[in-house]
Image 1 (cartoon, rainbow, N blue to C red):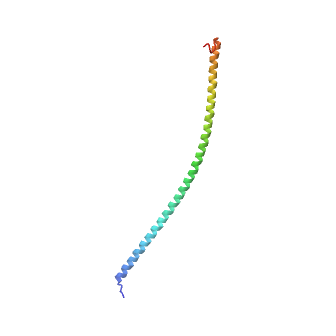
Image 2: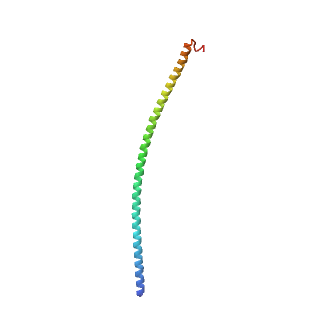
Image 3: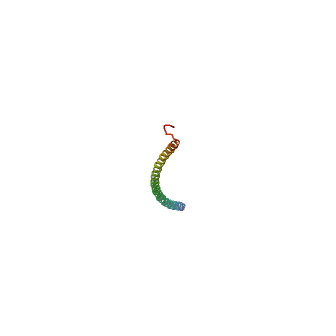
Length: 112
């Protein structure tokens, strides 16, 4: 049978206290890390929800802009047709003014 001395018993008690303190410190660190992880997860969920909302808004904005571009392109085509029509009318008016001037001078287009 082995005899344990008082010094060995004290050393064992100190080691047990040290290990218990290390265990308590480790448990506290785990709890602290778990709390930090929880906060990060909550922030991540918030950020993800915000990103999803931003994507929806961006898609809506893109759709609205595409519709507006289509409307504006239609207006541009209409204005181009109006311009071409007015240009044609102006060409005819200028031609008619030249003809009237020639006629007033007693000449025709062929004689000019």
